[in-house]
Length: 144
Image (tube, rainbow, N blue to C red; front, side):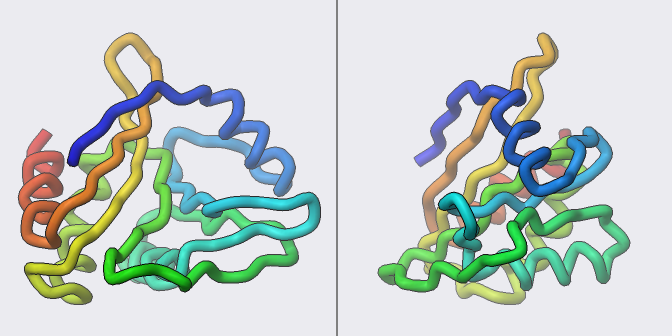
């Protein structure tokens, strides 16, 4: 499954502002899965991806309120955090390596990221498929 939907960048900027962050197109933001008034719900893989990006000198921010918890109650599908920011082709190679090292070829993975079109509009891309299928998509995006 590969799905594309338009997103409102103002909503993302509002979410970041609530956490005392300012959106920059040069950064990567690993977004929370959900939020209440005083707490954020983070994806279970968010800290690992954040750490991996930092180790590879990629400017990234794990977006969270002071109070947060992790979402880990899932079925066998691996759901990766929602990532926004820099052109995805820059990020694709790093994620390809992380996925290759952490999941087998038959793991089912859901992944969400943003893509900025030539007209400046932002779109959320949703992918669900095997690890091997996602690796092929990431390879193609890394070549763009």
